[in-house]
Length: 391
Ligand SMILES: Nc1ncnc2c1ncn2[C@@H]1O[C@H](COP(=O)(O)OP(=O)(O)O)[C@@H](O)[C@H]1O
Ligand SMILES: [Mg+2]
Image (cartoon, protein in one colour):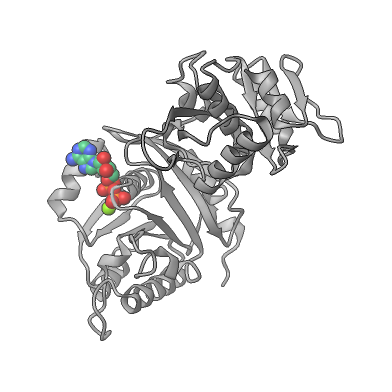
């Protein structure tokens, strides 16, 4: 395959380029996965129109919507139709011959689960169909040096013909994520043959479609009430990009039966661990408390670097006292109540400083941490100590 980096062309959407590694590579097959309703079709239609304007002909093939439905959506999104060729079709051979005839600069298949080939003795949407159609689209993309984007729904039970079974076939896999009740969407790279998977794109779903968020920290903190009880700000890393996010916790006495723990946007098992460490090592009696933890903006934080923020938010709610509003916290909590350092500490601190925070609470490390001069670093070695400083 003669696909080199030189064949990469930037798309007119910076957040998408960032995740793709600077642009889309000619002849590459890019899978955009995500839950139904998350915004895949919206994103792809917007990209189609932008590329059609910049590079000429784009084929947008929908197997799920009629032409008039797509037109309605295009109108609502305010996208220009010039150079955009819409096709409502599910049969692969028809799609391929139309693509052949049109010779577009970009082709979109929405969604791969809706496409099938009658030659195959398998039901539409089955693994056999989805895999075979993907392989043939891959072949077409490579032969014609045209990038192809395919949308794939993540199915509830995972395995059935969802994007996972295609991950090893396609060149690039991106997932569009977000909570249904939140307008923010994160586009995350899961595989990239032509670049790193370390970047995320941040969008906000609005009436006119997905809008790029240039300053995610500002967006995620925009609803924050300063000096709220049970609220802390953490500096988390999304790929290589530091992001400030608010974590909220609420503790209430358990009314009946076993205490409940609810984790929205943080890992449930980490919440259990943190609650246990707070009880055992810090002496907070959480055994008869229900605990709810929430990440605002619908972001999901997987990394342990948010542990300290979660712990401080819980302690703040339990003690009914607000955390220092000018403080950003970072650190992993260990089982003995010790704080562990986290990767890329300096970038996280720099982001806190950029957003105007005055102090950053971080785990004590062996080495020296360089930091911007307008932020104070407070180093602590245990969770108990951190709570003493932060509350
Ligand atoms: N007619 C509409 N008016 C307003 N919002 C809409 C309309 N259609 C879709 N949306 C919004 O766009 C979101 C994303 O839809 P869509 O791009 O079709 O998702 P996907 O292709 O991932 O299933 C929907 O969840 C909804 O919030
Ligand atoms: Mg769709």
